Image (cartoon, rainbow, N blue to C red; front, side, top):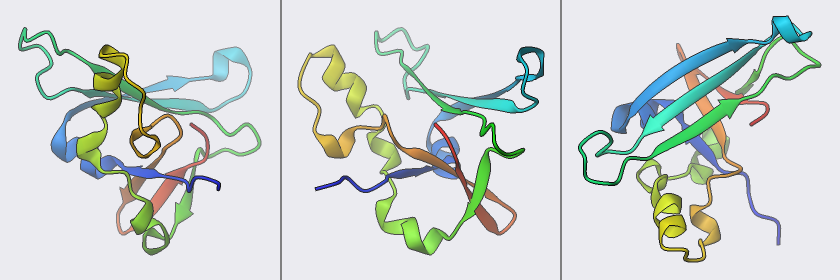
Length: 125
């Protein structure tokens, strides 16, 4: 059975964690586009508790288009939203070398951002 696409809302990440966004320009390397990177810091990052983790989400350029995002109907994906509070679960499994349950794997999630009243999904991750 194919696994359904999972999504994470950027608004939910920024509401629950410290997030830093970086935009890289690809023009010096040929195609004129951008790469968007979002560093999401674990809740106790910098508190010297030995649990300083950063998760990187990146939105890669769609070389056949000038935009890296496309409009999406939030109602159609609301049942496939990844619970933001679980994004650091994978790190815990890695630290203890335990097998990760598929429902907690974030390696193939797509980011969703809200701009005004519209939602956009990343084309490539």
